[in-house]
Length: 307
Image 1 (cartoon, rainbow, N blue to C red):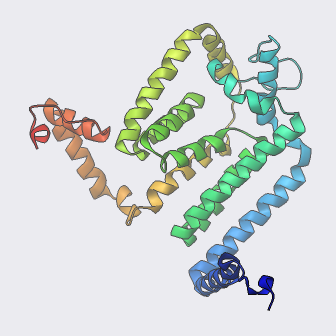
Image 2 (spheres, rainbow, N blue to C red; image 1 turned 180 degrees about the vertical axis):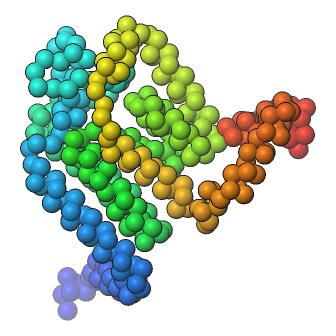
């Protein structure tokens, strides 16, 4: 026998077929269940409609992403990104955030648009996969309801979807990173401020701290910020379905709860309100509640601090 024949093959290579077969059998078993089969069919239907719509739009899409791309190039050439010349919409975000777009905006437009949309699709697919593993049928219904808003953002390239996925990531990362992601999302668009409770307590504290830094940067660029606000409020904004995509940011919080329906029950809301009202009459109790909410240490001399 030759020495070559005596060397066994790598065990990992032999294990792959078995792992794949087990995964396929497990998935096939799940699909025999009516709810899993219905979920898979709904997701397939939504994905088919979505890809067909994006393909039909072709080069007509990307108006919002093109505005970010052009704004950076105009700014780098000494121009005013808030009053662009040519077939571009104005940039309407904080001036100190422009450098964050520079590495992407230096790409040629065709490449930049492909990278932007591909990144959106990959991250969205990851979030859908995570949600599907926990609650398949609920995920399929959510995708079906929010599908038009997903398509609207994927078509225009609006940054909404990136912001939502930043809020997703903030619910899975360390407190400092979570706070940073939430603060940047809030600096881009004000709506994410309402998602602060989704973060872990220490993440909320870091988020408020980073948002304070964003406020300082806004003051340092106040002249440009005033121009930004003028453009923002003067820009016509019809009713848009793309903002419905922010509901997707609630999924990690809801899907990990064993009984998410309790969050909207009148009894739960009444108990929460009574607790806040009772603590509001006692400054020490209110302070303790706020410290718990932000993961801060208890004040010395209190019952919690002595424990």
